Image (tube, rainbow, N blue to C red):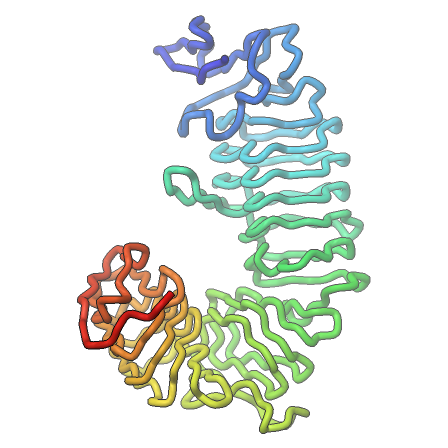
Length: 418
């Protein structure tokens, strides 16, 4: 089996044979078909070019880039490459093919159909990419970031992924277009959970798309009854249209000073958007007795105030006392909040995942002994040291978090049955 290239001064060793290659990987005539994958190459290897010995039935190279023999699959590009035109015969760019490369310009030819996961992640010098109309699929993190096996996050500088009006794009992987400043949703792109694929300031949807529409960069269902995502830019005030009945998992890092919800909303999945104040606008068609949500002092609750849905992370108040009737703290409810002091009520029962994640000004959290369940393992994620005083029965190995010291408390209650 072919072994990774081992650098010996100016030589590369393959299958026990040394080549005077000077940063060229030479693929011998006989080699394993599945060897050249991302995980088999050492990180940081400075490669100028790939070369394939004549007669190899599985591999070929075009201007130093490694392909399948028929060039329908682009497998791996040398990391020193700066400019490249993908051959018209290429149907797929393999996962991680250009990862870590110094590519500055890439021309993708018509006929290309698939760009694999992480294909251009970690490309720090690539600014603009124009997709051919024939591309049907972008894999996870194709133009986004990627967490390597060593725990390294590979960002890139791609700001513009141009999607043509006649695009045949049908499938987007998670974070595939995460850093693109403008995302165009063509009429063929009708998959679910599309909001997980980008985090863009501007999103436009083709008028003929049967599933989605957009307004002011906000992504809605075609009938505007579902809000899927908010644009990643700052708003002094953002008013959610009265037609919206369901809010998906929405989040944007730039912040909204005032987020105005309507009283027709029946369901909110999760809000991680940085908000200064929540407001609910009255006057919809909702029966007040059936209202799903309410706001108290800028904080979003369920209608009966027994569940705290979202605390405004941008609020400048230093101390917050959760109302005594609250039984549940929702997922990501206090995530990124600036508060330095938090009082939770006796009688609180359930805390959901990431409820207090990255509350870095909060140095101490006292969890009432009435709490029976912590849903998820990332409730207390933190970039700064803090102490959490908590019922000892709730402390599990999975709950252990860097920078967090758990102080176990005890009472006469039995642990909750699983």
